[in-house]
Length: 192
Image 1 (cartoon, rainbow, N blue to C red):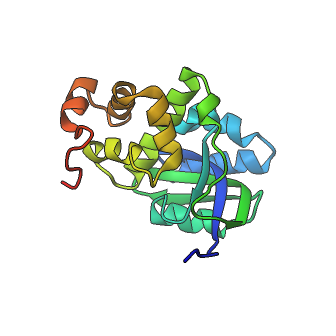
Image 2: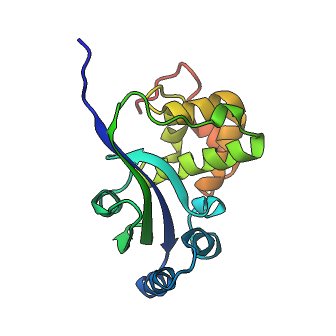
Image 3: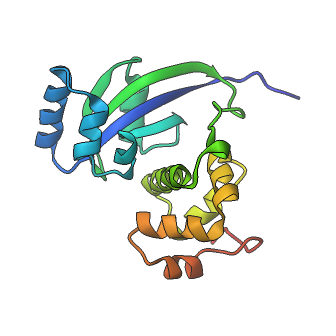
């Protein structure tokens, strides 16, 4: 039996820095009219800085709890923070909110038509998000191949396993060869 359950998803950017003081200084600059994405590109310690801190669409359960609570409490167009997580201090700019999203159909990604450079950036963002969720580098490849992460799976299917392993290794600060050995092969048990 089909369900008509709808969920809330948001699109957000963030800036991740090491200290509360820097986050507060950046918040002042934003309040004074400086562009969030430019500050993210300059100051953020997250790989998403390459896209002005853009994290794309996400629902509840996709980010660490303090980040999620702040992001989902924000109104569309609002900048919240500083928010402390185990990764540092975040400023979060929620720029779009959808309250009635079909959980099986998220917004189109456009990943299928992107060039390799853009797809590598997208893959890096997904790997970083999975890392923020607490997954080990060994588990991340299996998340890219999972049908539950449709957009990440699309990127995997276009770029291939070798490129995705290189991206995962870079995000986790490992050598690509070591990651490829640690990652389960297609068809192997991924539950360990």
